[in-house]
Image (cartoon, rainbow, N blue to C red; front, side, top):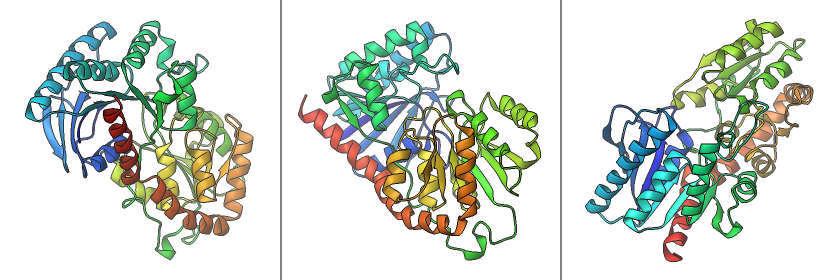
Length: 384
C-alpha cells in the first residue's frame, strides 16, 4: 500500500521534539508500507530528506495571513502529491489536521482520485473563549474545517472524547469516525532498572515532572497552584517544554513564592525525555483539554506513577495499566492531594507503575498504532 501523508510539520530526525508521536507512528507505518510525507511548513527551508524508510518533502512554506497561507501551500502540496504519484501510484492520502493541511489533503485526493482520510488535530473544532483556545473560535477557520470534513471520506481521532467532538461539533456521521491513537516509541521509553537511580534512593528530594508546551489548554497554572500546596514536602517541580506562554507561567510561580523549587528546562529533544522521566517520582498531566496525551503514555511506559485529569487517553491508560490517579479538571486541591498520596506511598506506587509499564508499551506502541492505522487505510481503499 502506497500512502501519501500531509502534515503541517515533521521532525528532521527521530530524536527531534517536533510531533514525536505522529512521527513515530508514520515511521512505523513505513516499515510495512510505502510512505511518503509532504510537510507544509516545517522544517524550513524547502528540502527533501529520509527518516528510515519514509521519504519526506518539506515545502518550507511561511505561515502568513489566512487567505495567503491557504492558497500557496495547498497548491504546492497538490503539485508535490502529483509528483509522488508519477513516481509510483498513490493508493490513499492521509492528512494530519483539518485546517490548512486538511484542505491540501482533500485537494490532493481529488487530483489523484484516491480516498481521503484526515486526522482531527488537537485544537480543531474546539471553542474555549474562557482560555482563548481553539481554532473554531474563528469564523473563517470554522468554514474551512467544515469544508474539509465534508470532503474527507473518513475522520481519524485519538480518543473517545475526540470522537464525540468530531460527531457532535463537526457533524461527522459515526460510521465515518475511526479511533486511531498515535503511538509511542516503546523501545526508547523503558522502565528504570538501576536500583540506586530510582526516586527516593539518592537522598535528593523527589521530582514531580510534567512534559508539555506552555499553552492555555495545558493548564500549567493549576499544576503550579497544586504544587504550592505541597510546601511542607521537600520536593521539586520540573516543567519540560516551552512556548509563548512560558513567561506568564514563570510569573505565576513567582507570585506563588515557589520559583526556587520549580525548574523550567525549556524544550528538550525528544530523545532526552526518557532519562528525565526516570529521575522523577511522579508525573502530572493537568490539561483541561488533551485529545491523546502521548507524554503521559511515555511516562507510564517508563514506569513512574501518574496523576492526571480525565482527558485524552488518560482514563483508558490508567485503567489498562492498573495504576495512576485521576483528578477533576481545574481542581488544584484534589491534584495536590493525589500527588501527596503518591509521594506518601512511593514504593508501592512505583512498583505498581513498573508492573503496568509493559501493558502501556504493548498497547500504545507506535508499532501497534501503525497496525491500526493501516487497517483503517485499507478499509478506506476497499470500501470507496
